[in-house]
Length: 405
Image (cartoon, rainbow, N blue to C red; front, side, top):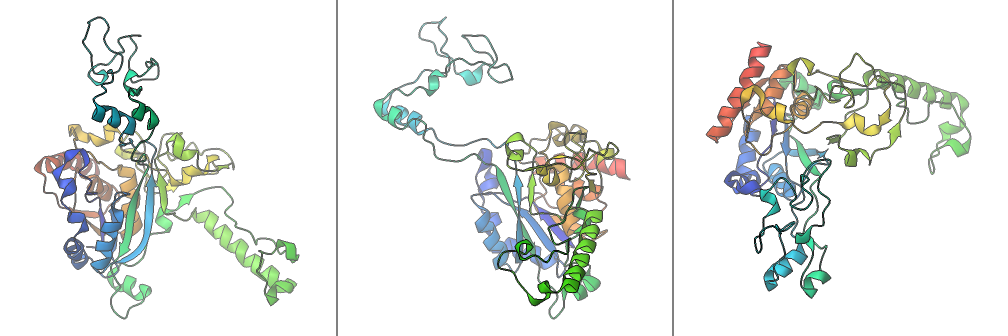
């Protein structure tokens, strides 16, 4: 196996699923089996939960892998799972709150707002852009103790998932170059995962400045006082910058979903307009890592491109969450609760897999890794215990195989 790209259980018991609380992701034996089938220098990418990632990473390392990095997939659509402390106190004291917007047309009858689509007071729907703004009676504390602790909770909103980047040790006594030549593994596909751009990528030093005030603070060497040496250095920097700009931005260890709250954390950059011939900007038709939002196969691109576009720097790290159309490809009615976006999985597969390589996913789920692998022209081996998810995976993969082959 050339690479392993997988999304194992986060061991949180998510949605009451038994498979998400088995502890398998923490077992050294699992990752030893993965290590055994990988070629020397083969890479592993494994998703984890923010609260449980450390235990998985330790098991991976104890199995014999080298931990190389952690990629952060950041998103804004996570749902807070926090206990309302004030409400819990009222419940403990028997101080019963009204359900949201009590039905006053029937005395003594309370209707749970979760069972209705429209507010009984204003008649507006609860969940859309023009939603009900009536006071939430179920949020008003009753007891004095609940009033004291009103607004306190127990958890933060989930907004990222860490991805463990690990590597099987190189063959004993070999350098990376030797290992790559023998096994085809040991290196990351940096250029294949660059984000091409028209922005200036120079980090300074392109000009042959000799004034001390232009030198990095605390950095001084004898050659810096030699004009010829400084000019030679600047020439090398210019050549490197030109080379980098032709290839694109170096792939980073941050990827995000393009939500407003995530984008707000990135600075604005301006360098031109979007190239209309490329489906790669999230405000156009595509996804900057690879592929389009509509889920159509013909818009999945093998490489990303930003031709002097402008806006938030977040566009260089973008990968949206899976849409309903993408989840339910080929009428699969995908009920898997943790489907990853195909564009993201394409990017990850391409990052760690040599050309025509074989990818293993020991937690196949609904087959997103397999779809991504086939689109990227890799071979794929998936393992799945759940028969329902296996059938969903087969349907989703069948559509891709039909279109590709």
